[in-house]
Amino acid sequence: MFRKVLVANRGEIAVRIIRACRELGIRTVAVFSEVDRNALHVRYADEAYCIGPAPARESYLRIDRIIDVARRTGADAIHPGYGFLAERPDFAEACEEAGVVFIGPPPRAIGAMGDKATARKMAKALGVPIIPGTDGGLSDEDLIRAAEIIGFPILIKASAGGGGKGMRIVRSPEEMPDALAAARREAMAAFGDDDVYLEKLVEGARHVEVQILADQHGNVIHLGERECSIQRRHQKLIEESPSPIVDEEMRQRMGEVAVRIAQAIGYVNAGTVEFLVDKERNFYFIEMNTRLQVEHPVTEMVTGVDIVKEQIRIARGRKLRYRQEDIRQTGWAIECRITAEDPFNGFMPSTGRIVTLAEPTGPGIRVDSGVYEGCEITPYYDSLIAKVIAWGETRGEAILRMRRALEEFRIIGIQTTIPFHQAILNSTRFLAGHFDTKFVEERFSMDDETPPELEEVAAIIATLVAHRRGQAATHVARRAAREIPGWKWAGRWEQLRRGG
Image 1 (cartoon, one colour):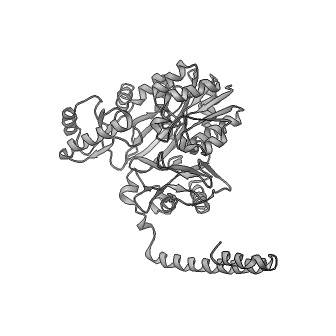
Image 2 (cartoon, one colour):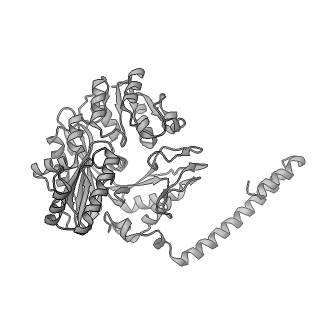
């Protein structure tokens, strides 16, 4: 087993990895930017080193500085988490050259799946169902001609894409030139590569993905599926496992396809094969993510497999501890991504200091967090601050527990998406499992979720609560008057009167 692991990330995922290492008896090294000097992952790690200024390109994306810290601290391995350098084959190669184990797939597998157009071509060669579209490397003129043949609406996608960057929906030939230019600009800015390709837009599609694990000895298994259709601008917001639309026969077929793809490219470690599912429940391969996913906890909750620990064991050369027949999905799990954004103001980012933080607990609740009371939320990085995961024996119980957890979650000082998640979990369409990837953008509104008559009820309740709190404060004040010397009491009463 490794003696020391460097975590090349920040936030909740860095904390998650550090905790897994601690349970395995492995010491950890954190890296941080100047603005993250007091971050939670820095506090949790055994050692921590500054690697540059706040902008990610000058810190968390600096391969040379991260490798230098690994060498100086004697780290045996580096875990990249997700985002930043996690899917960069050059980072995996730099780790190998430095004699440090990269806890992830080999560079060739990252490269094979990192280019989405190449991945499509490989899947087609394997006989895996794919959405009609084009290869990468085509000019704008060729893509415009291909779009006419494929038929509108179509989706422009960045070949090196991820996270919705470089994506554009096009519904007519007239929109193509401007959409292509915009997609190429965004792809270049996000990935340093402006190559794009086309896919037929599947209307009313669901986004379902399959988690796989593969060791260095040729063993590959899948851990079932996750439903990821609650999205906004191609960014996932709520995930659950299992999927409401997947039965056992479909689960087996999707799992077999995911395993076949992983075997074809000699994949090692954890990965996720993503599919679109149409209204007739036909599924199509879209891409493979060669890293740990943000939503991995829901799979852990229903299978009992600690995916991060398995990543570390696999990287050490151990065989998988599980066979496919050992994997069982028990119960249901739902994850809500809590971000520092204002859902009542177009999801505008919210920055500032968290002055009060109370995280939910209780049966079936897990919180993966990267913040603490008093920490500063800056504009430099992804807005994800915590993930709430609820498990229940049924989907209904998981939803009820999630509702309770969100009600308990208190974050004061910044705006968060907690109200958005509460509204979604009260939506009749979500409760019935009747949604697709466009549900949030086209059939959901925060305004719609609060009927006018409830606003009056809320105002009455707020008044009653304020009145009861006033009574409680008076009671406390009178009791304190008997215990606090008179010369101190006047100032304390004024403080209580003002709400102190």
